Length: 92
Image 1 (cartoon, rainbow, N blue to C red):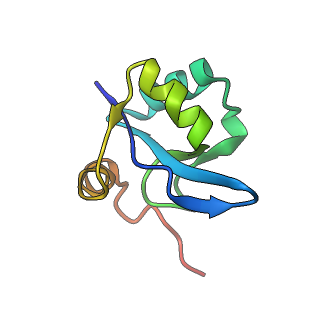
Image 2: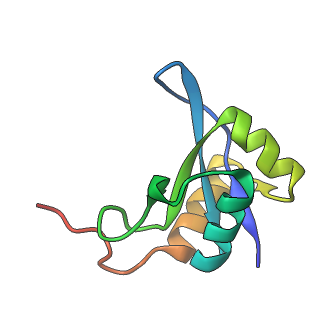
């Protein structure tokens, strides 16, 4: 199993942000915990269709040092599609 990060390009509240995804949700949670990211930061069904964490550029650097695979935009979209939960996102 693998953990993936894209480029930290989204600006919000003074930081640059990116996505942390994994092939398996349990692996995603274990890796996020290893980074010191609170479980309450998890984003997944039913609010989003792909289980992930939004992390800062600083956290991204640490994730890469711990073994996360750096992905281009195209690669991370492919991961999103692979781990997506069908009908996971509920639109109101």
